[in-house]
Image (cartoon, rainbow over all chains, first blue to last red):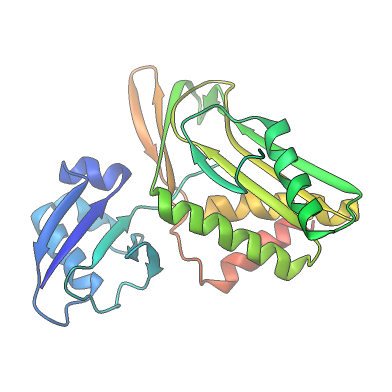
Amino acid sequence: MHVTVRLFARLRDIAGKSELRRELPDGATARVLWDSLAAEHTELSGYRDTVSTAINEEYAKMDHPLSDGDDVAFLPPVSGG
Amino acid sequence: MAAPQFLITQEPLDVDQIVQTVFQIAKDTSISNGAVTSFLGQVRGHNLGQQVLRLEYEAYEPLAVKAFAQIAVESRDRWPEITIALHHRLGTLAVGETSVAIAAASPHRAESFAACRYAIERIKQIAPIWKHEFFEGGDVWIEGATADPGDEDVREDAYRLACT
């Protein structure tokens, strides 16, 4: 399956892109996708326990299974206000 | 026409505008209000001992608007007669500019003060918005809370702060 990845703030700066396309095995979770990105960009691994995810514009858990065509956002700790 | 209840914008924020928004919503819902509390967050000139030159805000906009709507629903759960609006600015902001505006109206003042405080604490906990701070000699992404809207303990923290 193919998914779109969105990265924000420092995550985007590390990866150098705000939007990526990735191919994943069926049944892969957001965590699997994150781990593959962190393997490509080792600086991302520091966010392992603090990153949040949103799937198709809704917050989701990292163990949420992905589907073909999903839009998966990874969010570093937030700092609005 | 009143501004939207939940707004993410590149344009400067205006306290009168957001107050008018809650008045209009309250009128439409026939709640008889006796109090409105507003809050403006501004760009501080100093942070962690550094002189701040400017901030750049970014957001995951569709999710941020949904987070604001959730905060409004949570506020109503605690304070059933509250009417609340939340506006946040994005882009480059100079020191002293307003980054966030909240207005909360209710029949009595205690609820409007509490809900306004609750809303700013919840924005800091769960709104997908980030500030990039630029100071003399460098810049840093500010990273606060890991956003988890379903975490009841974190939500309780915001409620406690609102009511102390």
